[in-house]
Image 1 (cartoon, rainbow, N blue to C red):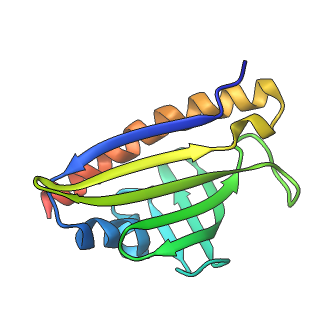
Image 2 (image 1 turned 180 degrees about the vertical axis):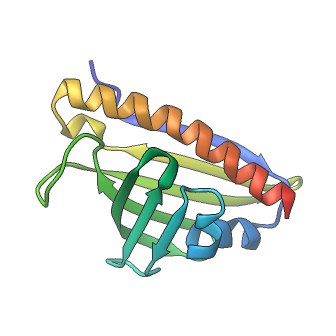
Length: 143
């Protein structure tokens, strides 16, 4: 059985607007999500991410922009390539809470890929999100 979804939730001690900027601007993303990021922040816009330490890059398509609460993009399932390759949806939801901002991340759609690819991609992205979200927290707390 393939797990279709990755879900993470955390509370960041920062206002929603600051977390939103970290998630949706090239400058903000480049500080925690890989080495370089470019983003055209509109539905249908292109987002590009590069991880120099992993010699890896990814191109995504912006799916949802609802400032400052909801942002989503689609990217190709890891291990696959091409226009017709299955894509997962990565969705960030922000909610103001007394201690700052609750961030909820959901990446879904792994089950579209063949079972072995889906399992591998799910595992890689699950570990990846743990590391990236820790980097997000460090970035916000350091500034």
